[in-house]
Image 1 (tube, rainbow, N blue to C red):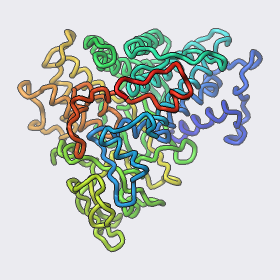
Image 2: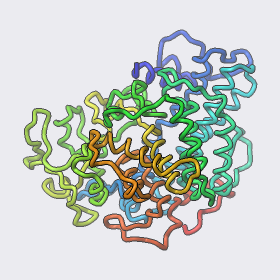
Image 3: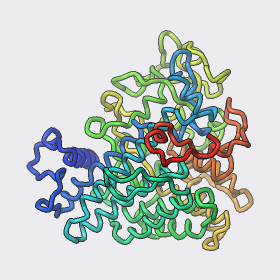
Length: 514
């Protein structure tokens, strides 16, 4: 079923880009040239029209937005390994928080987000004159919700940004809106479109916004309302998380790792919104290549050598107790091949050391620098990957986050829940992480906001939540491995507007501090 969904997504994207015949031989009318004479009428035709909006989401790996969110945190360090992974110093700048408006990750991330927003605006313009129907109303709501998600990502990263809701090549260059106004726009856009989004959770709606995806995004926005708009809104967090919880549509996976396997998909009960990937038809999931040692090719039966780059910091690794099932997402210590024999690379035994970081440049020797750091394999390395492209869908929102967001909002002061309820919510996560070991549970005495912060780190490692969490908890300026504490640089909680964007739009103003 998953492969059919992925194939459908790619076909829909190809259809709207005028290359339908090169992607499939199905005899369907193409809606890339949308006119009054060929209005879409069926759900399939509406999906074909909107395909590029979803294809754009798959580009967040290629265009560095994932890298931007992860490599600025304590979750990820990308050390230079002799001549490997220097890459013009871009990973060093991310770790030390010395990025500039000219940094590659700033430029590519900005371009990804605003190109996707432009695509959504173009599709909405095409839909304007279509006859009124339930399909039209639902499709517009879905596209606006996707656009709201893109705007959320851009606002979270860059703060004061332009908001454009029309598609007009001749329009004047847009001006920025204050972050609080962008926040208000996104939340109102989502709330206005809730009633037209589907409540169905099925293979048909997989990879598209549902009412529950919008509620989850709203909860995440309100969880960070104090950061984004200067005013906490904890009750709103509980209202929207309750909508998801009370829907009965989702549940925690009994096996934490099932939702990250190479064949993950709509059969998983926990993901609320995922971006589908396919090794051939929907390329771009390259994550396992970033983290695995070269020799792990022989552990996982891969057809290409991984790139031996990303690892985690010792302090983040130390968040995971040995009895925590989630510690299994880290590769460390002696590594083995597929037959169970010790893994050897160039005559050197592959023993990964989570703590060997003598300097940011850890050296290129096989028995030292190239073995430094624990590696994350939460997303199962895919033996069926093609030219580095894996089949794992990327989970954006999931039910565990809903539970922990509600618990945090209660502990921070929401009037809509009790401390006992927060404790129960967090212990659902702890029970799964420990095979229901009662000694692993929090008690009323030791469940604190610090507990929530640490639990979120363990639960959502490499899921693009850590930077936002660090900022909300006031921890983004903490010492991170080689980066000293920088308490006077809170302006770096938002990234600089890229120099290329400033050059192309004279109405943009650089963020303070840069």
